[in-house]
Amino acid sequence: MKLRVSISLIALLWLAPAQAQTMPSDATALERQGRLADATKAWRAVTAQNPRDAAAFASLGVVLSKQQEYEEAVVAYRQALALDPKLNGIQLNLGLALFKLGKFQAAIAPFRAALAADPKNMQARTLLGMSYYGARQFDAAAKQLELATKADPANLELQQMLAQSCLFVKNYPCAIDTFRHILQQNPDSAAIHMLLGGALDSSDRTLDAITEFKQAARVAPREPNVHFGLGFLYWKSNRFDEAKQEFENELANDPANAQAIGYLGDIEMKRTNPDGAVPLLKKALQLKPDLRMAYMDLGTIYTRQKNYADAIDALQHARDLDPAEPDAHYRLARIYQTLGKTEDSRREFAKVEQHYQKKDESLIEKLPQPPQPR
Image (cartoon, rainbow, N blue to C red):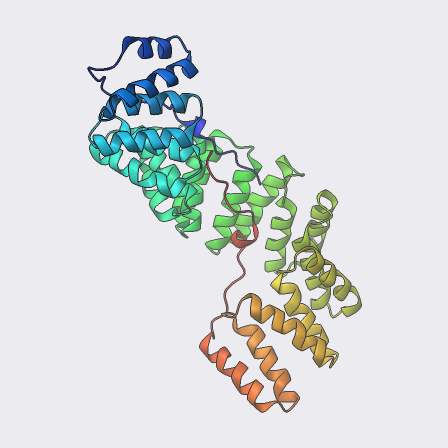
């Protein structure tokens, strides 16, 4: 599921600082003529002659930014900021240069300062929201992006970031409403149908989620993970025949999809077909060694076969992948109890009591993470 998130979604403007009285006209003229390399040399000469001229450093930063020399621009902006923290536009320009470098966490402070200086500056608010999003601070991102999208409701990329931010902080009503708003403008977006389906599933509306994934599969049958997601929802609903078909459809598109292979193995395990399940589960683990479910299933199969050594090995892998889950601890405790390993059994049962609540399976956790802005 690919969502292109680009900084081009907002109109960007490198703000020229208030002009310094000592600014030589030739540097300004070179910049206006588009001779940016020459203008850079001229501004460096100005800053060398006037090392206390904040506006000159800021102008140097602007010229460097226009040449995408963002590292050097950041240095120039910070020098200007040290000389005059109130210089017009300096915080926004610094934040934008850091943002373009992908330094989202560092960009947050200057954007916050720019917004504090001008609360109506929607460019600063939008970039602040995008920086929070890039830094994976989704709660803060949602607060800023909600305001930004109200000012620009037709901007689908901002809407996508808002919806995903709400999704990842489990604000499902916000996510569902926003995804539906996007689909009103772009009804054939398979990616949005899938994300809406994930939000609906997390809201215990699995049947509605299936409808969205079926729609996504209809408009884009080769979309990565669309058939896996639909298969997972069928699997979760114990509709194993339909789940198997969808997992196989996913593998027709992507033969190396480890999760689809693993869940096919799980279906065979549930159907008490170990000869069919074990090769699939092992293949899934070759492709994705951290697929915890496959280890749990192998542990179950080996336990039924009284192959306790292999069962313990598989369940220890599952336990180590997520020590907070009680199921592996419980199954290990039972095996140790069977083998007469009283102390080991007591230790694992103690972990079960400590982590007695098992997490529900979540489709959101199995789909790709949101992209970073660029």
